[in-house]
Structures are given as structure tokens and as C-alpha cells.
Length: 113
Length: 115
Image (cartoon, rainbow over all chains, first blue to last red; front, side, top):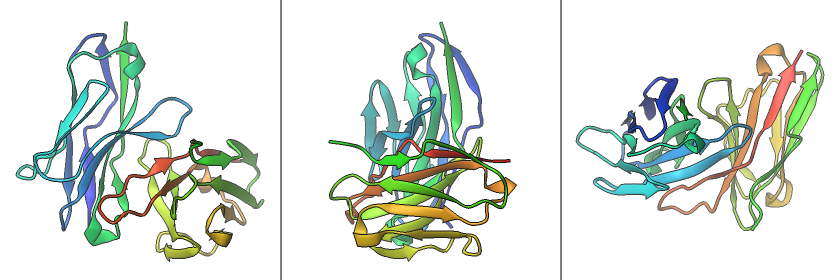
């Protein structure tokens, strides 16, 4: 079945450091890919998305490119801030699987001043 | 526009007691989801509704869990009786149910602690 594997955490960075959180997926069809963010005490919020191969999703300085050849959707940010501290979830939604969302286990990011 | 509303935000009960969670989706969203999120894990789908019909409940432990979505708007998830292992965050999400891609909007969740 469909699945998502993302980089284990926790990840601790200093402010202004470069961030990469790896995500790879397995799907039978052509899924849409997402990154969700969960701030402490809050629900999941959609950070960015890509619906087809080579699409780049971007938001708040974060970017991820849908790479069909490597089945990846790595999250990147050039300069992280303390306010980026949160848990990040990679997810996919596959039309061949009723559009049900499959999430990775999440990666906790802590950014220190 | 209001987001997905869930209540209560926190619930502490003793094992074998019943508990219920309530969700009000975003207005106009036909599809509603209940997810279970264990500590340190991603959400896992329990049940999905299209309007008032439960179209995917294959992951719902039906011996103790039940859900309903009367009139295709609000939804309630119930556990009876609760077990220690049910301690988790229960998330509700909704979407338009668009066929192109599925952007889901999540509520803040209900954190359940079973003692």
C-alpha cells in the first residue's frame, strides 16, 4: 500500500542554518504530496503541496520539489528561524486509494537562537 | 472563515469509562475525517465520511469505537469502554471532497488521557 517515510528526528539547528528534511514515498498511482506543520498545542496546518511531478511547492520560505524519479519530496529552507520550531509531517494523497491521506511519522525541528 | 472546531480540547477519564469527541467541519466541506495520532507518530485515518455516509471505516475498531455524522455536518466519535491504549490525540479534518487533490484542514485535536 501507499506509505511515506521521512527523516527521523529530532533535528536541532541554530538560527539561520539551512534545513533539509528528507521524505520519500511509495504509491501505486500518481499521488499529490504535502508537507504539514504542527506547532505546539495546535492542529496540523498545510505548509505546501505539489500535485504532479516536477512541481515545486513553496510557502514561508520553505520549498519542496516533487521528484517522481526518486519518489521524493524533501523539505528545505535556506535560513530557519526560532519560530519554525515545530513538527513537520510529509504526506501523500492518492486518487487510486480513495484520496486517503498517508502521513509520515513526523520530524521535530528545534531552532535555537 | 472559521476553521475546524473540536471539543473538548482535553479529556481525562478512567479506563472502562465512555468518552465522546465532537467535531464541526468547515462550512461547505462535504468530507469529514477522524484521525488517531499517537505520541511521536503521524495521524492515522479512523473513518471518512462523505456527507452523512461513512465510506471508509476499515481502520475503526468497531468493538469499542463508533462514529456518526447526522445531517452531514457535525460529527461525534465515541469510545466505550475506553482502554489505557486509547490515550492519544484525536484529530478531525474536513475537505471539499474535490476529486483533483485532497487538501484537508485539521482541527486542533482532542487529547485523551485514560488512567
